[in-house]
Image 1: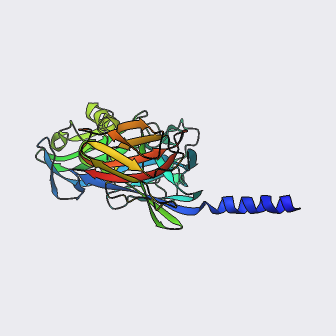
Image 2: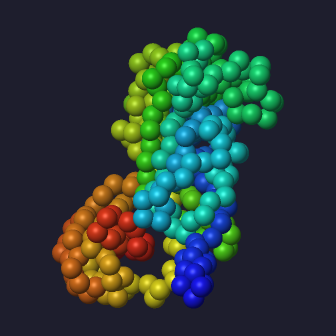
Image 3: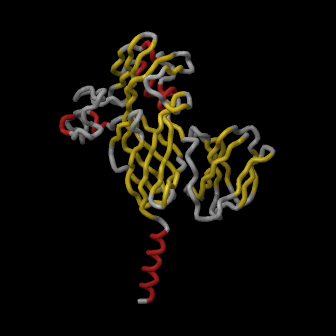
Length: 319
């Protein structure tokens, strides 16, 4: 009986270390690092200028990696992102720390066309469903399916629409994330959608009405990965930690650290684009790493255990 009581107490204590949390993902649209404005003249870094009147895309199969490699899937299979509607409720999860997010840009093949294993006629969806009828339309018919991204407006060449459609244009995105713990029951994840990068290499003002899988449509969708359209938001704040945070700073070209979690075996540094800047094996909770000329600006420092699980995260600004 005593063993049973101790076992039950252990289960209760272990369960209390994690709690149910509502998780939200905000994908803020920016253009040249500034908040995206519709119906206002925008100047791309290639000199092209135009005003956008619509910019919409689908995000699907959102998966979060948390608490040392566990995975949880979002409540909804598909979300529609619009300029004024870009905060997604992912669901209520039993977790403590989120390390990474993965999603697909576009509607997955199983839902996209008549050949999809879970496909439904568009008229079967309720009005509020992202796969229902939209204005402007995101649907290109039963055979071609949904458009992963549409963008349009007016420029020097008149009105334009770049509406990409075609099976196989979907793109996978995965990013390390820094969570904001709003309360004991809510976590926000913040990333950016860099609209200017999405149309890199395209003279958007003069494309005319380009609907389909023409070279510019394909280029736009390829840009999702090649141009790092989605990046970690520099404004994302750090998770409140149970233990005393580690000390880490840069001095004389060296990154010095102390008071690391005892199980730390790796230190990984990422830039705001989610790219790995430096990775180093750690043997002691105190030490230094050569960081001369590695990076300037914001960096995200992840302390990981032997299995790659994230123990702690910090952000630094390198002058």
